[in-house]
Length: 370
Image (cartoon, rainbow, N blue to C red; front, side, top):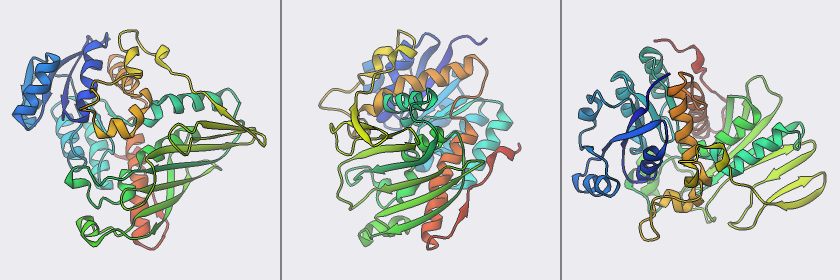
């Protein structure tokens, strides 16, 4: 057994949401925060009483009192920051996606193997109350035999930081991919994806991706079940939605299609709206309240938290799983192989779209060596 896990958080926009959760967790201690802007760093650290502050990520990694790093930096930096932390002997939790290329995914898996440290991709949807409820419905037989799965994530990113501009839709697909694959109990094997529509030339020029929408069909390893994923990021008129649908032979769960419209369970051919319970009871009492509230006030809420409806109460569940995986010396639920597969679905889907819908095999990361 390990003593309390001493954690540092890197990136204090969305990352600030996790500060009080680590501070309250009975098995963790938040010892440091890191942000490039000294003003922003001190403002957040002062608000939460965090003692150690770093504007240099490299300097922070040299701190021997830090056991684990929770990374919330911009997407293009995820792989570099993750590998650096693992090589420095730190456990790593990283917001999604894991990386931007399959080579980066492979490098992270190799770094985990070499370091012997834990890696967890902090995917929110599979710890949302909606997902946890549907997972119960699958496990208790209510859904019956799973026949088909669908995931979708539609979000207008026009007001987000510059590196988002023109991002290929499938390069940020884990919110739609993760619930589908978890409910299927399988990793993705291959993908066929079609790109549809066009975004403005100025947006398309950033990453060379012209598509407004990308829609993919997945085959799953050792499974008869198929899945469909749809993503859009720009110039597609739609209320924000992260959603999944699971079709079973006994019942089908369908995510609400408009905010507040209500989730639907189709039993046979009869649809009924259902209430989804909270799952705070699965958490230590000290962090259970964070399933229903964040740290921002109405004036300063982060866009990802507002548009994601609080991410379904997932944040304390993610922290708890990461911390306990270290304490118990076991792989976290979303380990390096799982995170690499979920991330690579999107990377390979976009490759397929750019190749006119050619089938692309998803790499098998289980055989990556040191």
